[in-house]
Image 1: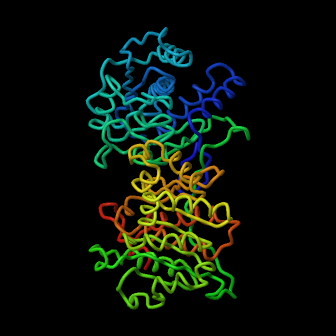
Image 2 (image 1 turned 180 degrees about the vertical axis):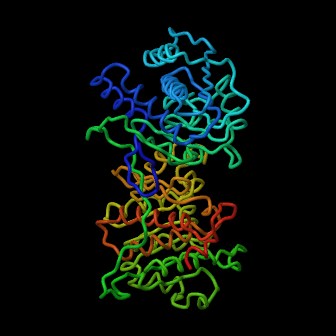
Image 3 (image 1 turned 90 degrees about the vertical axis):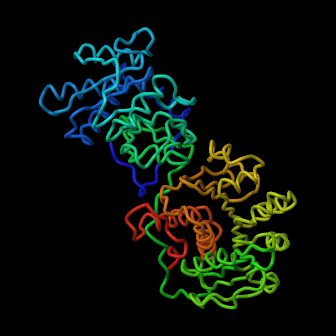
Amino acid sequence: MRRITTASREPLYNTLTTRQIEARAQAGLPLHTLMDRAGLAVARLTAALGPHADRIWVACGPGNNGGDGMRAATHLAQWARQGHGGWQVHLTHVMGPTPDPARLPPDSRYALGQALAAGVHFHADPPDRADLVIDALLGIGARRAPEGRIGHWLEHMNVVATSVLAVDVPSGLDADSGAWSGPALSTEGPTRHTLSLLTLKTGLFTADGRDATGSLWFDDLGVSLSDTETPRAWLSPANAGPARRLHRAHKGTQGDVIIIGGQHVGTHGTGMTGAAVLAARAALTSGAGRVYLGLLGDSIAWDPVYPELMVRSPEQLLASPSLEAGTVVCGCGGGQAVIGLLPTVIGRSHRLVLDADGLNAMAADSGLGHQLRTRHERGLTTVITPHPLEAARLLGTDTTTVMTDRLGAAETLAERLGAICVLKGSGTVIAAPGQTPFINASGNARLATAGTGDVLAGMLGAALAGNDSSHTLECVRATVARHGDLADRWKGHTLTAGMLAQGSVS
C-alpha cells in the first residue's frame, strides 16, 4: 500500500479493464483471496488513520464493495478484542441487521459468514456520531445517484463523521468520468480519504473526483498488470521546474513567442488587454528568448512592469517571418477583433497555441475548424486550451455533457481538430490524436481566478518555442503540470482566496 501524490506517473484504468484484471487475477488465486486482501488493506489503513478512534462506523452495501467492508470490520473487531485498538466497531448493512446471504454475490456472502463466525454484531441503524466511517456502500459499477437507505447514509456520514475512508471509490462518484451524484460536496464536511484497490481509476482524478476522493491511497492486492491491459489514461506528475539550459544558450536558441490578442476597450466596448499582457509576461518569465506582443486596437506602447516585451502592431507581426519561425499564442482576450486575423494565423504559423476567443471564433465558423484540421496534415503543431464551456461550443453540446466525460470530450476535440487538446479544470486532460491521454495531477482552487488560463497559454508558447516538434506532447504535459505546481507551491497556505494570475508570472 502506498499514498498517491502529485509526484508519480501512474497508469489509470476504467471500469471495464479493471473488471478484466480482477477476473484474470481471481482465476489464478484461491477462492476469496482478493476480498481477503482488500478487507485487510482497508482495516490496516483504518487503524493507521484512526489509531485513537473511539467509534468506527462501517457502512456496507449490497455488492462486493460491502464485502470488503465486512472483512475490514471483522479484522478491526478482532484487533480491538486483542487489545490492539480501543475502538468500537459499529457495522451496518443496507439489507438490515440480518442480511440475506442468498441475495449477496459469492465473495460478499463469504465475508458475511466470516463476520458472523467472528461474532461481529450488525446494527440496524447508523450511530449518532463516529470518529471514522468506512464507506463500503457502492463500488466501481455504480452509475445512478445514490438513493433510499444508501443515499440517507451518505448524507448522515457528512453530519456525524470526523473523517471518511472510501473503499475503492467514494460512493456517488463515477469511477470512469469523475461525475458526482452523491450529497453536495463541501469544504465543511468530514476529512476524506480513499483506498483504491487493484487499479487506480480515472474518475478519481478529474471532474469532481479530487474533491470527493481526498487523500488517496492505493493497494494493488498483489496483482501485477499485463501489457495487454491498456491504461485508459496516465496520471501526469507535477514537475519541479523548467528544463535546465546549456550554458551557451542565448535568446535566439530559446525561440520567439508572438502573442496576438488583448482587444482594446474602444474597439467593441470590451477591454481585454490584460489577458494578452498576462500571456506575454508568462511566456517571457517561462524562458522564451523574445516575446512580441500584438495588441488589438490602440493600447499600451510598452509594458512598464516587463519592458523586455516587444510591442508590435498585429499587422506587422502577421507580415513578419517570425510568424513561421516562432510560436504564436492567439486568442487571449481577443474578443471580436481577433476573428479577421485567424485565417492568416492558422494558415501561416508553424506552432500555434489557440486559446479563449480564438476557440470561440472557431466554434462559430466551421471553415476555421477545417483550416485548423489541415494543419495536422501539413505536420504543423497546434495546441488548443479550452475550458469546459469553450469545449462545449466546439463540440456543439453543453458543459454538463462535457463534464460527464472529460476524457472523451478532450479526445474527440483532439481527433476532430488534429490538435493537442488541453481541457482545463480540476484534473486537466491533455489529449493528442492517437495517444493515450494524460490527467494532470497538480493544481488546486487557487487557479480559480481570471487570467490563470492566459498565463498557461503563455507558458505553453514559451515551452513550444524552445523545443523541437518530436517532443511536443511531453512538452505540453510538463508545462500543464508546472502551471498547476505553481499553485500547489504558492506562498499562501490556505485555499480561502485565489491566486492572482499576475502573481504566478512574477
